[in-house]
Amino acid sequence: MRPHQPMEFLRQLDLVNPEALDLPVHLIGCGGIGSFTALVLSKMGIHRLSLYDPDAIEDHNLPNQLFRLKDVGRLKVEALREILEEFAGTAVEGLPITIEAQRMTGVVISGVDTMRARKTIWLRSIRYRSGVLRYLDARMGAEVARIYAVNPTDPDDIRLYEKTLYDDAEAEVFPCTAAAISYSGFAIASLIGNLVKRLATGEDVPREILLDLKTLTLLTSSGDRS
Amino acid sequence: MLFGIWPRILQTRIPFAFGYPLAPPAQHAFPAGAQIGRGHMLRDQEGHAVAEIAEGNIYVLFNLLGQDGELRPLLLRRVLDLSLPHLLQELRSLSPLAMDPLRAMLEILRQETEELAAGWNRQRQATVQQAYLRECRSRLQQESAFLEHEMQFLQEILEEYARRITAETRRLHAYQDRLSLLRDIPSSKEDSLTDLDRLRELPEVRAVEVEESRITVFTAPIAVEYDDRQFQLGSFRIEISFAGDIRIRNLTHAIGAYDHPHVHQGRPCFGNIREGVAKMIGEYQFVAAVYVLLDFLRTVNPKDWRIPIAYWQEVRP
Image (tube, one colour):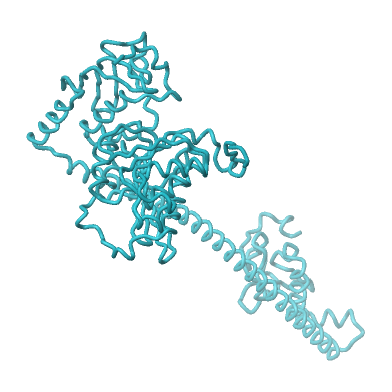
């Protein structure tokens, strides 16, 4: 068996300097969005990655999340740490906790599955936090994905984002048999990877991205005050 | 020659002779009467005295030599056609021809004059037509050039107006947005006091003072976690002016001119949060701004700190 070697990023050197990716990235939620995102980020060269998810892997998670059959019953963060180690040689931090008011810096990515959790994360850990470069709130329902990229110290961004924090009761509920599919997770993970690269290199980042895989539509918006 | 020799003789002006226009500088002529007119006066069809026959001589009374080169022989022929029939006797004495052949000869000469006159008229008409066309074209070109110039000028004015409309529309929308935003800011005494109370209730805030367009916040001791270690940075005074200036002073643990790893002589190096904080102050969101500034004081970044955090005292558990 070939001995373990650190990845070399020759194929992406002109796309992003590996040194630019030396920034902390926090990934909250390691399910349909987070598990694929973690893989994308690790393969990109993000090595200061922290994972947060208190849940364990269940059978129904297997088709639309990155986990292996043998991972059922394990903590998501533990299994994901192992997968990332195998796929990218990345030693990431994994904490099986719910984010309450933890202090985070750099890029924070949310892939949680309830609006209540989003509100808690936003109000207690993100809003007004000067150390958070950008908060990427990724949402997915069936074949539609939406990502909000929020500067938590910019009042325009704050206003726009807080308008999207509706209650869980108002959220569209998909039937259990039409809630998630693997390619949606890969697609949204690709977009998040692109946003992280843009943040790392100082490129423009749209305030909102909408991806509709049913109609194959991709829309970006920088938003306005309305 | 006559005009030069007898300058004392009165002169008149005739614009036409035999119906032909005379050159403007050569329209002077001798009037009938006075010294002229003792012979037989001959007049053209318009009554102008054009010649005088006296003692077998023909005197031309207008300025024949001053006319244009092509008109001059025609006028001379006209004078001769008019005069010679009155000098048949004199001609008879000089010519071998009898009277009738002489008359016939004069008639032939008169017809030649008519043909010459017709040719001259045709040439003159052609010249006039060409001049007319040339003049018309010139006027058209002048007017076209004028209109093109005016249109270019108006186009530039319209473009400038369009640019101004765009700019002013943007300003209008910006002012509308700003006004809408200001109207959303709590303005009542109760709301403002609530904001102030919220500021005072922050756990890191010890006191808040407001004076002369400035809000001053005194903080409790602030500690920073870095590299799994905790450092005591001390208590700070944050001054926020309504105009947007921010000064942060370390009241207890300044390291020389450094109040904080990211604050030198009271001037914070905000990095990527500068724009957001400025917007918040612009919107009178002082509570939010203080939240951000407190978080700023609790955050250090080794990539752009001015002095390392290790200069401050480490807190040991």
